[in-house]
Length: 100
Image (cartoon, rainbow, N blue to C red; front, side):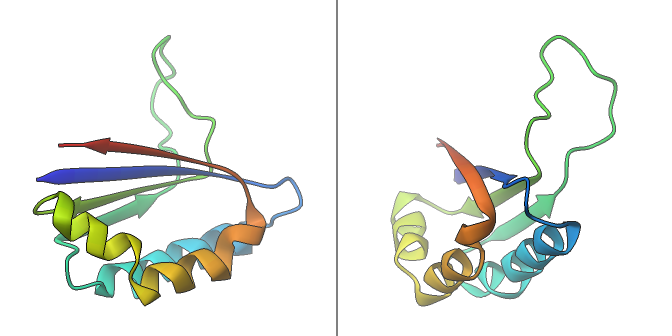
């Protein structure tokens, strides 16, 4: 199993509608890529702030794949490209963490 986690920070000029549109695109585009086993997307949770807590992101995405090859298919998939094209102008930064 490969766990692909992405944290998006949006530009100050972005609106809540921009954030929600990105989340909708994740559900409506990325979740349809045939190699995606599961997809979760959400905003930072209102949990207790602890010294190890990181909440400096606007949207978090976790995608599960069977293996690295499946994730490789996802990375070049037209729906992934469409997701990026639709939303990249609103992002100030993107951080990716992959765990096998």
